[in-house]
Picture 1 (cartoon, rainbow, N blue to C red):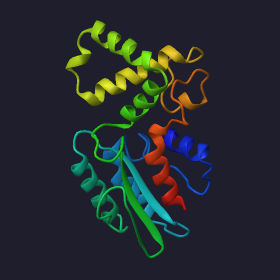
Picture 2: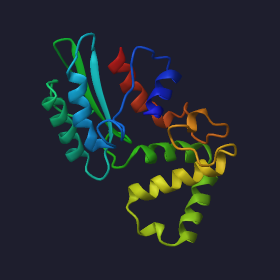
Picture 3: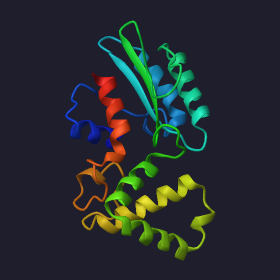
Length: 195
């Protein structure tokens, strides 16, 4: 997850490795996380912790339970609740649900919040675009957020308007300010986890 790596770098945290399942290995998205965790658990030598950062979507409790189950099934300590850290046998574990505590949504919602805070006009522009297209407002809130963020990236990144979130951090014109205070809860949790 490039955003997490960028956030760690911005916070000068260099003791963590960031990884995620890929289509080639384990599959995409949160459904692939259980297999990914089992792969990590095959060699715990030198491992100091595992933090799962996943979208809350519209079911934070269900998504937390699924990630807690996945950690437990992979022989890690089961976290009792999200946004807290547990430690056993020298390995720290935790689950962070994006965008933040007590809020449904996704990574894209968090990133949009940061963009809109810096560029309030962007909210109106991308909202008008979604209205103009016509059918976007019938989509789920999560898909609307993904569409809006993709549209903004295309509008701001002149050299690479088709870039994905994986590459936006290295693109001129990236509209997402990594220093946004919108990211403070996650950045603080990452520092606590890595500390």
